[in-house]
Image (tube, rainbow, N blue to C red; front, top):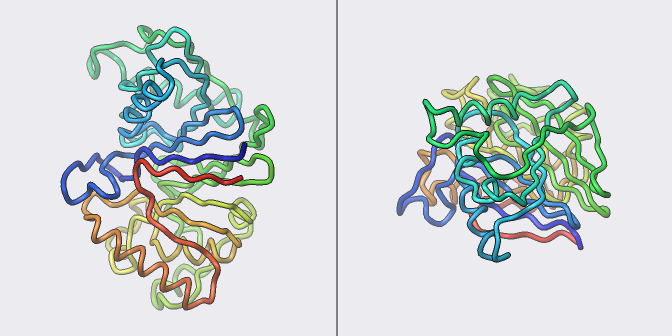
Length: 295
């Protein structure tokens, strides 16, 4: 087996159901990654509810053994957890990872959002076995799957994750104002045609990935009025992935104000930029319900 990736939530900031978002989807961040026998769930936005329903439908029961990796604790990345059916199964075992042995922030915040002032069911009432775990401050081997993280630029902090298995590599990097990390940021704001250069540590993290799933919420035209909001220009993602020799880029965290047609136009601009730089990168917009296989 290789790595299977399924998109369950690809929208940013707030769920946006409706006819204008039905092709890409209106649920907030949740990605399912199956690497060998290990199930990883990346973020727990409103798309996590759909993932739980699908697990029940395809298995005939809701019990799972899963590793939960959260980029950060903003609402659009944790709001689906209380509606995740496997969390109520007494046979489920779920590990919630921090970066090190003392990092229990996400584990405690999931407790917090289920206090009775916010939600009718308490965290302690969940039937599943939910355990805090950590990534040993860096790469961790989980039954042959290598998991690593990278600190990104977002208000309050955010983490990108790398999952590698049998020579295949998937990177998830949402809520990252990538433009703030550029070595030539000021020049690229003045002239958007200039290739954007990332620091070597980020390029090393992304290097050779079969798939990068990343936040490209803004167009070049939108970004100047959104500086310090914590999200990237989509074209910046293209340049960085080209430099890191990434094979495929799935742009996610679609702006809640963007219709499907607007997302289409943004993706087309990114593809034109790849062609302008004679790159081999495949760019597409992440869509709910789509499964990709890398083997």
